[in-house]
Amino acid sequence: MATLKCLVIGLLLACPSVIESNPEEQGEVNCEEEQYVEVGQPGRIRCNITFEFSAIFWRYTGNDSKPLAFYNKKTGEKEGTGVDNGPYEILEGGDLLLRDVSTKDQRTYEVEVFNEKDVSVIRNITLTTFIRSEQERPKIDNCQEELCYERHKDRAMLTCSFNSARPPATVEWYKRDDQEEYTKEGTKDDQIINRNPDGTFNSSVMLTIDSSQGECLTLWMCQSRWLFPQYTLRSSVLVDFYSDPTLLDAPSTIRYSELYERTKIRCGKSGRTSAQLIVWRKIVSRTSIVPIGVHSYGSTKMEGVFDGVTITDNGDLEFRPVEMSHEGIYVCVYKDGQSSRVTKIDMEVLILPTPPHVVVDGCDGSVGCRLNISDQRRLNCSLTGVRPWAQLEWEVHAGNPLEIQSTDRQSIARGDEFDISISSLFNVTGDLYCEDEMSVTCVVSAGPLSDRINPKEVTLIPGDTCKERQPLTANVDVETQSSQHLVIPLVISAIVIVLMICVTVFAVAFMYRPRRRRRSDDMELQRPSGGSTTHTGHADQIEKPLHEILAANHERNTPDGQSKKGSPEGASNENEPLMNNATDTPIHPNPPACKKEIQPTN
Image 1 (cartoon, rainbow, N blue to C red):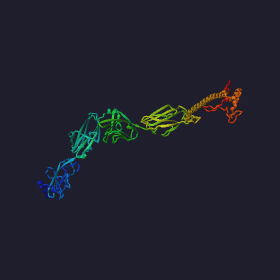
Image 2 (cartoon, rainbow, N blue to C red; image 1 turned 180 degrees about the horizontal axis):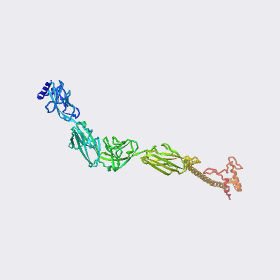
Image 3 (cartoon, rainbow, N blue to C red; image 1 turned 30 degrees about the vertical axis):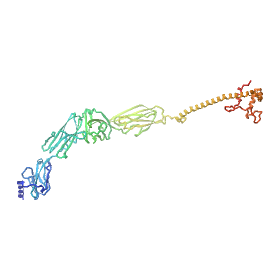
Image 4 (tube, rainbow, N blue to C red; image 1 turned 90 degrees about the vertical axis):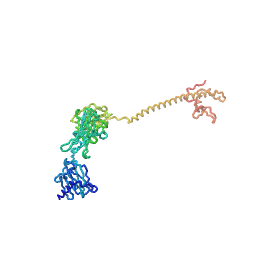
């Protein structure tokens, strides 16, 4: 059998041109022309044979010596210089196994496959050995993290490298702009490749940035491309050209945060910013500014060691929780659009009192209380364990007959905290009635604690020295009294006017009635001179004494309207009272009040 095997091998080696390949009759032998195996690991050169083969040979290309490996599938025998206790082995499917890959295995291999008719197919495979680098990403100077940060004054010289890889990696610099696009910097010729003793390679490329370009905050990316697409790796560096004097002289705003609370400081003048490049620092002194961390497009990197301080995904500086050591001035440098800006925040830590409200001697709890007061009273108000220093004041409510006569203040520092108190002497300025109550309030009048600590109102109740209020004589409402004061003058005026009218009427009537009486008497006395013979009787009366005539007239004016002598019924009575033609008002010629005014005729 051994003799036969040698004969077959000899014939194949001696007469290779006798056998011609015929793929249409034999099927296919598919082998990738470039294949890779890792140094230090078992490797495999693969070929896909789609027909039943009888024998297969593996050898180095251009080497007519004995094959590395031979496999007779009919007999199952495997031989060759690399098979017998060597580094190679032919598998059942025809693949060549490398038991322990070394850099020496990197070369071109030839495989020859025979079918049942002893017709062969030959394929060539270029084998590349590789060594993985231990770097997870490109290294920028001494930073091997995904995001790096460097401060420079005038010029920055950055080196990106990817080391100990076989074959060598390709490294390149890119600049990232505000539209999140990358621009390649430099060419492939700028790359430097060095070979290591173990067969690996170091690849590096340098980048020079000048601050005179006008950008104080820029982001640069280094990319390494290696053997396989999945090994394309990236690292970024944020380059900062801001100088310390610029940061120290920037204006600052005060931010108050309570001790042990969880709080955030946002970058930007308005408290919010859409910037994707942010650098946080803390000013330790006029000569020392310590970096805290950076934020770049969702990635963060902490530079210093600050317990309880982190940078969130949107670039906020978060304190979890606030400690006394966090108090200080923080500087935020950020790029907003085409320009870079600076924001400085002075964070002060607040400590609320224990209990968390002002304390008034004699009052319990956080709500108001009631206290007795005499003519003079001293009230004490205090805060314990606060920061920063605060000022207490007593406020007297409007309308209360109280004034502050004197005030004593005291402030004691205990480490980072203060104990503050105020003692005021109140004086009663007016009458103090027993039913009156007065109110005063102790407040924090100044400082950041004024809107965080609740005031306390104290109601002062009069003591034994108060006065009893005298009852009023009439329980009349003020508005009713005012109305009465207006009505009384009006009534008096009306009465005076009525009296004046009455007096005027009576006076006119008094003057008018005697004149009419005289007129009636004159008419009576003139009747006999009419010359009529039928009135001779009247002439006789005229000749009578005056008192008789008056008596006769008086008899005519008796209540029954007749004289004492009488007259025939239906006869004309010449002594009836005269009627005024104008008013038809009876006129009596001889009222008793007018007797003295009648003069006798001659």
